[in-house]
Length: 117
Image (cartoon, rainbow, N blue to C red; front, top):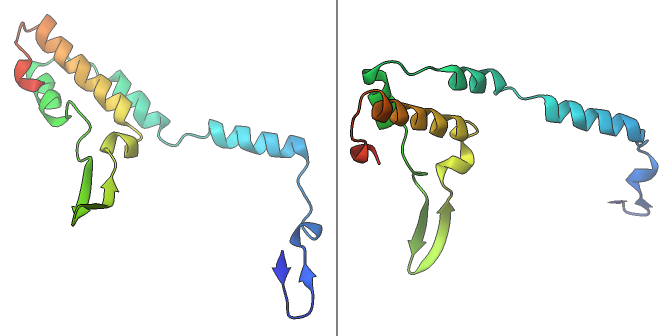
């Protein structure tokens, strides 16, 4: 509703609604559109066949969601910084890559991975 000096104007009266099937098609197309899908597929296709690469990945990708913090001032929470895993759209793929690297180190190389946990 738009209020003018003399009358109220109801905007829905001027806007023509879309047909129901057009709305459904638009929502399905948006949900199917995933710009990060090629990158996700590349991360999933990485094969770990090298000890140095496995160690590098295990050190590079953290074991837990980093940086979750509450910033407090005089005992009151001013800002809550969410964990990075909630902000990173590739977090699941990166954690799975780290898991595969750790599995390679244990299964193929026979290393103790407690230092990476």
